[in-house]
Image 1 (tube, rainbow, N blue to C red):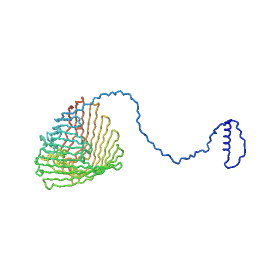
Image 2: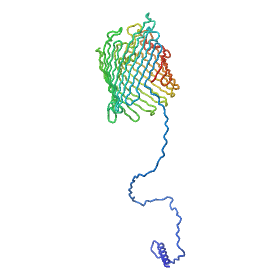
Image 3: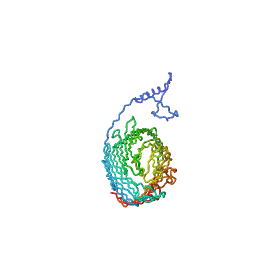
Length: 573
């Protein structure tokens, strides 16, 4: 009963507490009767507002400081061992060190080539090569029975590889015979009869060169590479020429860029000490040329544009036993080439202006035209070229290049022959004249890999030629082109062909001689080579030269050999 009284007292005080109004006042007296035990109930919640109105009652955030400590946990994982893969043994094709090719053709034409190279090595590399080709006749309608030609060469090289640089050396010997057979039977003189063997000249060339090249960028400091070379040439008519050259390329630091500098020196001396038949004493003289080139240039980028700009400076000093011919000249050529990738790795355009000086040595001239009359002056050729170039890919197997512009060559060698040569038995060959030749040109090349075993290529040059100073572009064509293809059938038969196209050329002024045509007609010279591969070491080949048997002149009076077939074998070891 005591417990019941306590509960009643608590309930009564509670009811009085919640019934007390806000304002003070008397509620009077009432009687409360408890009939059963109190049962608590939770009323159903109702949403007072459609959107909540949250209010952050916490005005100050407690600072929290924490740290994560790494702790290695042992992981018990033992992967299952994989079975070893089976590697199939593939036989590596043999790398042969030597090749010998020998053949024989019409007009008593022997042919021999031999090559030998060292095996692959990280320390050194060396090789040797030799070649012989000769023919005795085969030129139609000439007064000489024999127009022998012989080309012979022997050479080798050696390279030694070090950690920071590479040393190299090479030597070459060429012994070439060319006949002055340019006396066609024109029927213009009663002497159009056989004259036996044609006069000839032997060009004997000996050359050597040593070089030093960095193995990796800046492994030699500022020097990138340097070469020292020497060449000697003499002929049957007492002509001699010694040529020394020292060439180097440097990479100099210039703030955040590298300044590239080419520093080259050349000296050659030509002497004509003997008279050929019919020559006069004016052809006996010594001439020397010292040439220094200093070419600083730098590469820079601006967005996607790439600039290569600088200067090309030459100092040319000529000494001559003919005092009036000695001179000193200084030439400046600005160089600026801009490259822009229209489509990266697909199409690129470039353009600019460049200039250079070429030396026109006796050896260089005889390589361009072996039918020269001994005793000639040497004039340096200055070339300035303003151009626009476009190159890129037409597909994954087709690439092209196209270039056009304006080119001036001051001091270009022009090969001229007296239009009355058939009456002159003294001067055998052609003389050299020099002129300023201006030309606007377009040239291009296309290369297509049709299939894995078939490739095709084409090149062409179209230009106009204007000569200042009274000369004309003697023996220079306005158009030249070439088309070549190579095909391999089942790795057993290889076919290669090339066709050269040469346009008409003017040999002399028509007013000087009305008996001969001054324009040499254009021609097509086609070559074909077939090779049958018997096995990896032995193969047989056949070559056809002047396949269409075109009758044309290289130069006025110097006609090409008729069609020729040459057959032989090749052996690899």
